[in-house]
Amino acid sequence: MPVAGVVRRRSFPRGSLRCGCGGPILPRRHRPPPEAPRPDIRSPAERSAGAERMSVGPGSIGSMPFLTPLPSESLEFDADFSGPDLDPKQWLPVYLPQWSSRERTRARYDIGDGVLRLRVDADQPAWSPEFDGVTRVSNLQTAVRSGAVGSMSGQHPFRDGLVVREAQPDVRLYTPRFGRIEVVAAVDGIDEHAMAALWLIGVEDEPEQSAEICVFEIFGRDIRDDGSALVGLGVHPFRDPAIVDDFERVPFAGDVREPHRYAVEWRADGIVFAIDDEVVKRVVQSPQYPMQLMLDVFAFPPEQPERAAYPESFAVHAVRGWRLD
Image: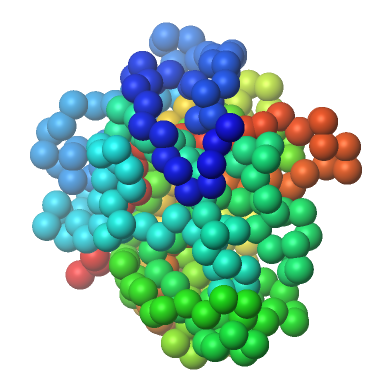
């Protein structure tokens, strides 16, 4: 039985879709034909350096511009999934522990062949029954802070009435203020009761510094039989009076169960959202303060628990952040 907070080092055949819990291999159904166009998921730095092209499933959005390559020297964050566990200098394997506890919110995951698989297991407890009901989550974040127990000072005010239940030290591993953030992910192991996502939230030195930039979120219910899906992206204000909610779900024709690159280019005057480097959305507003990364899989258990297919999981091949000069 999996134990919260314990990573199991595994050796996966490269490209396999084995569940992170040790369950059966997921079917590779609806594969694109060999002649289908294949987007390039190399990083911009890898492309400019002439690194070998990586082939993935097809993804056609339209004729909008593409993100331009960035120099390798501007790379500030490059997640290391090569070792037996996560790099503690890069990630905190918990989810908003100030509203619950580190122990209760500890992530479950596997690492093998340079790929991270975040998962939610059948025996995993709800992360905060007091404030978020039965929702379960495995999350990695790059910072944390809070006020004293009993205060309302904590990151990501997702609802009214939140109270700090476990005080958190101020830890900031990666908190960019502007930059390009990307994830290469295969959303290959969730059903209609789960969601995979990468988003940024304000570190919240001030309560108003609380906006969210959603790099991508994909609900299992929005994935079609051929792997095409609706991809959520945009910004949410929360307590930031300078931000207006601007969020949408864009149709993506590629197979999201294969690795694709989801990215934002966040500048002082606006944010560009892209899939496989092709721009799919722009907003002309921008949080003006440091933000942290939140990489996660959520499970929303149905009223009939036996209908859920655990583990809920997805594969992460890369997470990178660049400085924008």
